[in-house]
Length: 233
Image 1 (tube, rainbow, N blue to C red):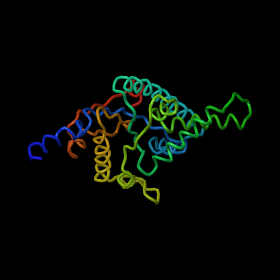
Image 2: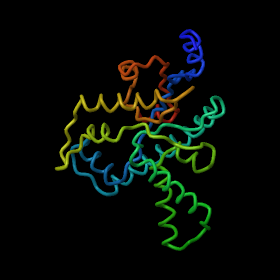
Image 3: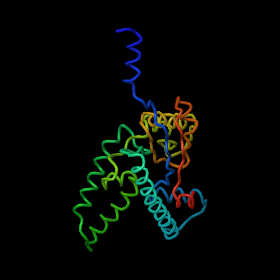
């Protein structure tokens, strides 16, 4: 086979899309536990707070997260239809915890199929925890549970994410800008493995414009918000 024919044949066997044509970043408002929320609230206000004050603020926070996730699910449904999405990239999901999270989603699905209305105190506590678990896994995972989305995939590299964690073993917080950029670069590399349109749910504090360019990407990058997110940012 001549070099010309070989080169010509290779041209048509290579993937058409070496990277996604567009990355859609859905800005996320993270769910956190009451304890973490209380600690952050006390730190930001700089004054003592009663349990009632914390509970009032936390319930408002939970309402915001719930509404944002419902709006994100509607947005994702539109993107699934328009772009025939099979998977969504999720912040915090790595090659290490991916399998465990998918198994957890299966256990949640089994619970939903088996649960029945009950006034039993234990059953009500289990249901309340289930509702919090739904907020924890997020909008894309909830669509996987409903069968509307095939799967969620890791946005993160575990080593880069762990290195960028600002919380030190002694509880102090040390922000490492270099590690944070390396983490975002790793996220960008993962997104560039997708074909067509890549959708990621990622906190609004992240902007991957420079990261995508730095790791050699040339696709379009779009940051998208849902209505309730604009009210809380």
